Picture 1 (tube, rainbow, N blue to C red):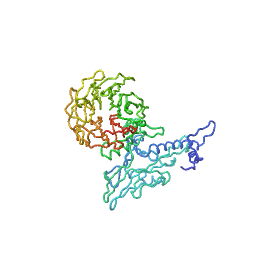
Picture 2 (cartoon, helix red, strand yellow):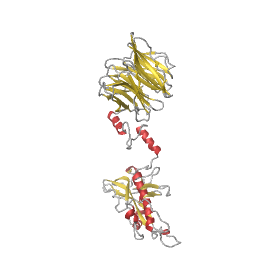
Picture 3 (cartoon, helix red, strand yellow):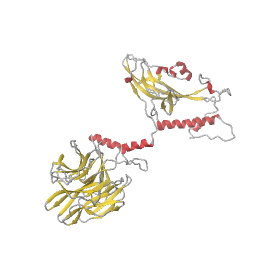
Picture 4 (cartoon, one colour):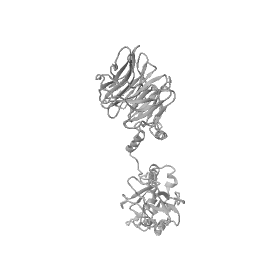
Length: 573
């Protein structure tokens, strides 16, 4: 800006570097041009910086301004505009400056393609490209944006002067633009060459020798499009889609994620399919811990139970989706035990089942429910009696709040596998029904999308073993088992959970070397196994589907190591 007609330029001289943000006029003093100009420059400077740093270059949402389009004329393109009005024109932001093209215009007919107009504005006029004489050439079409001072002496701007006073009391700054073209090798000029000019690439265009007319297929759009300030609702949706509902930030603003999106994608790329993430330590110290089991109740709270040593049952709860509460001892039992299982119904009730040593030669499956902040009476699930050992239980619930409990039962007559159905409450227990004796490893039960219960287990004690499944579809009996795959191991510790895609994750430990996952889905071949953990002799797995649809696996890594790990298996899409 020329300083000749002005007393001084206080904004550039000191206001900008001193971080002045406003000019406050006093009463009863002369008005000074520098003060008013400084106030206006402050506003423009702050707005431009906001657009420059927090929005960026590009074309706004629902606008297609300054797109380079093909035309039917030689060495010519169309610069896209709008509906002919300033409000509906094609727009683009360049270094915080918005420029507007009211309507489509040919490249050769834009204002500064005229040599006289360019000379009057003090800029180089726009020149059209030529057809390559040989080979190929890539041209870059780019925006040149600058501002210049307009006086009343310039043609078309005479009305700056108020005819009532007949003198030019003020001048105007006008934002100008021109679309120029340059070959890719030379490249777009650097900003401030000349001073005040800013540049933004719009399109690259492939030119071929002898072809005067530029086809649409040769034009590649370089503009950043759909530039906008996202609403909080859109941002929250992006976070939910990318990270799930458990996204939180710590006191430093860093994301507290079980795994970053990058880690998840890399894990899937490594194996070409759903991949394990983790493990993560949940409970450590003062162990060992065994038979961990978890569930999410109808209110979205997660519960985790486990055995501490061989006789104490402990639990913890997670209410905020991030932090577990301090563990509490739930009860003490007599003698060693072999399992806990949890489930939850739609009325907010949490069901806990465990096996307990009643006497030296008797183990029962017991149950207890937590409802409306209190525990109900303990009840017996299995057939109780001397020389009956009921252990290795598993439970599931369907959408009708029917709870299925299955367990391994050993008596003087041999080993059987039993089940019992509860219709919504412990007082509405159905008769005990035997499951096929083809199973050898203690089976596990899941409820699938069809509301049926499915039992999974294996048929052998030595490798390899067939994976068997039996179905309960309203009863009164289980179907005959069918083979759905095989496992290269013998007697196993099993866990299973149904995902939201009509598939089942079967998790198994061989009690010696590894914890493995296998994805099963009706009508599809069995997927290859995924190695989850091969460190510290992982034992006692359990599996559940959390409130976000992911499958979580809990197990004890090691023998006598006081750790409990959490592992996410990301459900397939």
